[in-house]
Amino acid sequence: QVQLVESGGGLVQAGGSLRLSCATSGVTFSNYAMGWFRQAPGKEREFVARISWTGGMTYSTDSVKGRFTISRDNAKRTVYLQMNSLKPEDTAIYYCAAAYRARTYEYWGQGTQVTVSS
Image (cartoon, rainbow, N blue to C red; front, side):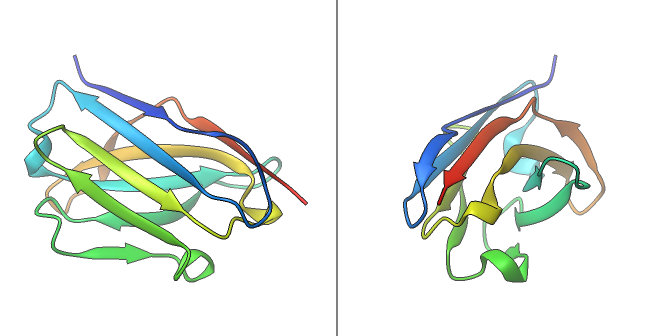
C-alpha cells in the first residue's frame, strides 16, 4: 500500500519559515520524482516545486524561486520543502506527489495546511 504523509505545516507570521516533510512508503522511493503542489481557498491546485528521482534536478514555480527549496533524502524515503520568507499569499494546503521517473504524478498525500498571517 502506497502512502505519502505530509507534515510540518502550521501557522506562521509573514517573513517566517517552515519546513514541510513528506514521508513515503510502499514505493521504491529512489525511482520516483517528487513534487509539491498547493491549493489555496477558492483556487485551483498549482505546482510549487519538483525534484528528479536522482535529486540532481529541481524546478520551482516563479513565485517561490529564491524562497522555497525542495530536497530529498532517499535513505529516509522523504522529500522536503524548505519555505523561507513566507508571504500571506503562500497560505494553502500543500500536497506532495510521486511520479515514476518522468511520468505523471500517480500518488498523492492528504495535504498539510500552511497559514501565513500578515
